[in-house]
Length: 273
Ligand SMILES: C[S@@+](CC[C@H](N)C(=O)[O-])C[C@H]1O[C@@H](n2cnc3c(N)ncnc32)[C@H](O)[C@@H]1O
Figure 1 (cartoon, rainbow, N blue to C red):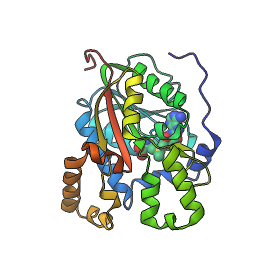
Figure 2: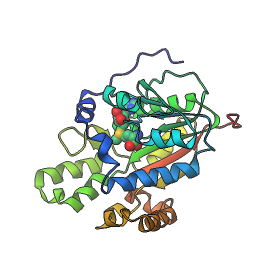
Figure 3: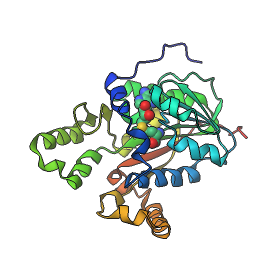
Figure 4: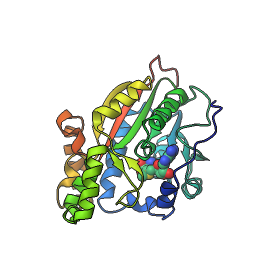
């Protein structure tokens, strides 16, 4: 158990999520690609379902719902009260208000810890190190930690597609984010940090985790016009997912994806199930 007080979520992040747009983000349009790809990768990299999975930064429970249906005993932890309240109605999911930097769980109790959100909302490297070492502490030896990050040039690519890049003040903001990784309030996102793939791998290693793989979530597909049209048809969607499985860990393409999953393992023999 950690004895340090729970750190405070930046007010700008709370304000951003209090707009209530998060729940729909992955359920409609092109956002579904992130959902299906995250599910596809996690189902292949996690151990067999059946133990405790802590979904840190789990939001409204978009992934917690199917993970629980797959057989995981899910504990969702999130600092936004509205997210926790919504997730608390999900079958098989218990919830707790909390912060990735100070998990209120005993050492070595989880089979899996997911950080699908906190790492791109913690601009201070010390905060990210705390979140990762908390995940490494909470997971059993041999258990898995998977972190999602937003790639360094994702906002620039996104706005080049959407046209925002052609508005000079926005372009200056996007160029600054590409240079530093910092996403500041007042832009298209909120307070955040956008990683290079090698940097998040180094952060997992520094927390004592063995990096077992990196997977581009949307690959290059999110930058291809019209990809959303293929997602409506199940067989075409499967074909898109097949293409992305082929390219997901290609080193030269990792940073092109909007999101990246980095999987790690706490050293030691897995004694979970
Ligand atoms: C974009 S949402 C992602 C939700 C879901 N995990 C997913 O992958 O779609 C980011 C989530 O991270 C949470 N978050 C932000 N800072 C956090 C922190 N310091 N500790 C834990 N969660 C945090 C937010 O409240 C939000 O629910």
